[in-house]
Length: 433
Image (cartoon, rainbow, N blue to C red; front, side):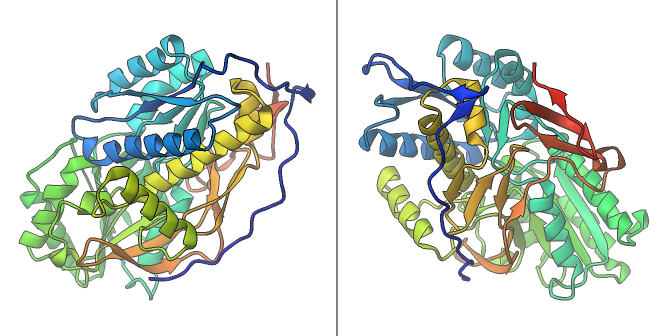
């Protein structure tokens, strides 16, 4: 395990200013709770990953209420189950905003679920805190992206595997679940690889449906592709419970990390908890946090998590940390604004800082993405990750990829009063109506 470089907290934030004036503290009956929405699948193929995120928010709400709540009021988490059903995500999001009157929503895992709810949040001017790595190529004033953008996960992971330290891979297998995140991420990665001299003949790309379970043929194809004599690596954007049979088939066919390393972007400690990890030792994952990070904040969080969940065997993972950061920033922004009003809170979010579980300083940037470190970890026999590579400093998430020609000229800056989510570079801005 390695200890990350630490950064001190900045000085206290200034008072909230919105639309040119101070926002008065919110006035309401002390008995009325502030409601937040929790929009995570508790059933279906994504429950393996999302249930823990629901529990994370509940733990943080409990802690906040034990400290006196927010603006003198208790906070109530309204939990719904969209059941890994993408249209149902939109229906539940609308219900949370219109019926339950939530001040913010913490939720979604897959990009298809986020794409499903996005029109609802933009129509109703809600706030969504999205805690999972994603493909970028999107910018919304109603979403704060607290997971990794491609330049904070996918690109650094491939650069590592191309390096001498990472094994010098020359051929690439891009395996993904068949939906927007894997396809768009792999579009970016293919462009990146092409720009670095890798021909399309040295790239094998394949997609499978959610919940796919029969991996025998695909793993055999990977082995055949890797037999060409060039060092081959697998980049996995497989999501949900399909990862369990995928890794089991790797072990069944003797695919070892020293021969064909697999780097995953959606497999963390939670997904490995149900697997025999002994045959998987040395395969990789790229995240912004691992449970094995040595930091005081991480130790305290793990202890609190085990106490809350009542099980010392339960692991932590990267999307949990993203929710930890997002929730704390939202609380700070509400306190700074003195209200849960969406427009005021959104403006107060910019430049919010939280000491992350890695001990580094997470900052919310005007493009609605965080500054975070990038870590690469090797699977260990106990289901944890040993960190083998990390960035020297935090990396600012980029909404638009420099490797996609139509995106390279775009930028995002949602600072009031000038706002723009897909502006041409150099910065062109449109007045916020």
